[in-house]
Length: 375
Ligand SMILES: Cc1ncc(COP(=O)(O)O)c(C=O)c1O
Image (cartoon, rainbow, N blue to C red):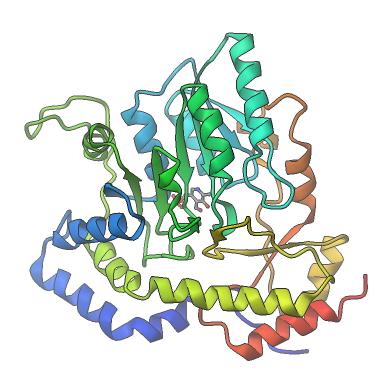
């Protein structure tokens, strides 16, 4: 039996960037400005530049990054926020934390991102029912590729809703050369270590173009602080990014563009090597994915998984149970017709090893294992 390869290899990246990162961390320790030190503002400037945004506000994690704009807009009890169910918990959790109600929307069967028709139908049905006031849409850029913003943004705009891009998995992705902020009111990022741009701990950021939103979010980030210290204008959070994490992320950001291309190379080799053996990811026209995950679909997933494990290939399932089927979320509304595409995808998807430092030999091992599967 071949040796098990890595699903994601953070050690290899650490080796590659060791000198820069160690020096950056030691500088922060020597200078002692652990909270909101100069590296934090430098990172915010660089994040905004990279995504062509007006402003970037760092925060404690990618979950708070979605919660912060909702709080800044005053979204709360009686409000509806439209979210996919085929996503990580945070996307819907923040809506409930803000006191509002998530409304679950179905996905596109090829990209797994929010389905524009299902969104339009969900907005119409919530409006007609009249119990909740539609306020915002959170589209997720799942597995690294942007949602279909050219179709989603006009639907949100026409209904007067804010549009958030939950870009936790896809910071650095583009559509027609632009970050999703070209369509969305806010773009939110996670720096969880396994994310394409990951720190060595938790971290997050929100990007936006609107000065008023930025000022309100900055206040939310530090306990709702007003114009003076210890004067509070709103209810807020303690959600700052540590200076040490900012320093690490600055070092990683300098090679991030190259790493996206390294991931793209793995994805290209997979696609060429797999042929028609499995359903390979579909990236929408004009999009650059960050390849946070390389997710395929197969029949008889459990058997296929066991076969890959025997060939030394680890796998993961994102996500085995869609959010609307979990107990804490089961009472919230779903789009008319339910979420059949979401529920089908949850039974079929499987993510394969993907990271920028994957060797040709490891990629070959995955391709051979997939090719050796007799359906
Ligand atoms: C789609 C999505 N949204 C939000 C988050 C939350 O990010 P964090 O773990 O940094 O809070 C994640 C991270 O797993 C995610 O995948």
